[in-house]
Amino acid sequence: MTALADLLREVRACQLCAAHLPLGPRPVVHVSATARLLIASQAPGTKVHQLGISFWDASGDRLRDWLGMEKSVFYDESQVAILPMGFCYPGRLEAGGDAPPRRECAPQWRDQLLAAMPAVRLTLLVGSYSLDYVARREGWAKASMTERVHDFRSYLPRHFPLPHPSWRTGVWERRNPWFVTDVLPALRLAVADAFAR
Ligand code: SF4
Image 1 (cartoon, helix red, strand yellow):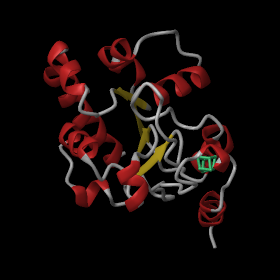
Image 2 (cartoon, protein in one colour; image 1 turned 180 degrees about the vertical axis):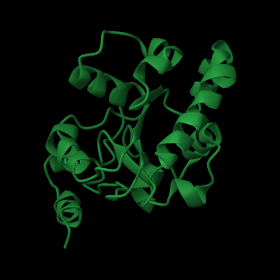
Image 3 (cartoon, protein in one colour; image 1 turned 135 degrees about the vertical axis):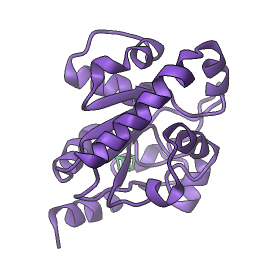
């Protein structure tokens, strides 16, 4: 049994914030010791909770479209790891929309899992929760998600900031046309480079 397999067994048995999870714990992570690309996302929605497969929804279709990546590569754990900031469905906000990732999760598991994935060359920081968490850890200056995405070159070669690919992002994309013309071609090159390095 490898260190990563042992760790995954512990993750799958985790009950740390069970009292706050309306559907109970069901950690959804996709990791391997050989993955070159890491997708640091937000938290599962209800559909992902039911199926146990990250981004098996419209958000995933949008993200794969941005990456120009087929599902066969996206779900090949030996190449692509998917690690949300919260591994279990966190429930809904009273005001509507999904609740933020449980704050207990990343401090409990993230560093241990990253240590067991030494081949990762590029991390896509998908959405404000992963951007803010990594910004605090890396000591980056304060900036909005849009500013970080616009300034993506500053974060290469290790990180690539992205918005969360939810349906709301369609409006954001239309307001920020440079995302399609400048950022997406660079994203695809950065991913190809991570696989090649
Ligand atoms: S969200 Fe994370 S910390 Fe909470 S029960 Fe799931 S795996 Fe454990």
